[in-house]
Length: 227
Image 1 (cartoon, one colour):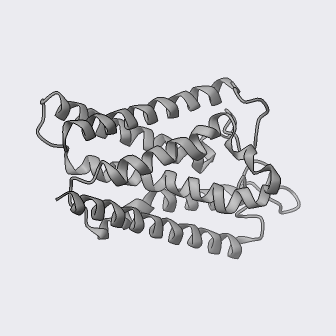
Image 2 (image 1 turned 180 degrees about the horizontal axis):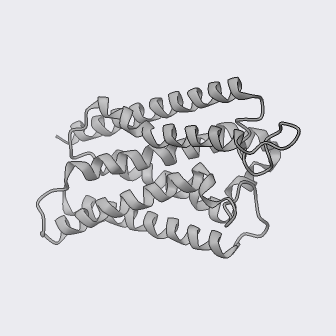
């Protein structure tokens, strides 16, 4: 990777790490900068129950890891970036890409004319800016390593874990009428019974697999174009 591209991706990853941490601080302190609370805004009480937060935090951690190696290469402390750092960045990018697409194609239509409420305050970072930065950096700057398309299955792991947790957590919090208690089915995936919940989970995992495959495919094609 030439120096100009390396500096660019360092800036992108640094910005992502900064914004995700800033969003976490805003959520923990209930700070808003756009007025109103929006929808599905992460707060202290539901912070880690939202895949939005979990996927962004993973991206933050994995972007931070590859960022360290990128800086080391820039200052000539290393000659290359290790393979595992690319894999981790791939996993983080898959999760936040799923978050972005879910907000655009599933949650926004539900809100109709109020779709903009999904992109206020912390969610401006978590639903839009950070996922886009992650996609751009991975597809166009972090493709100097040969990644097999078989690795797309690795990108599904966080969603597989989350969907399993989501269903178990939702159905272990039923009220006296057999309804899931408020706050335990934030995305509405478990509101139509266990069979529908399983189908929804399978669809999400399948969608994640498709996203992972396309990200890897484009990443590798862009890498080959440079060679």
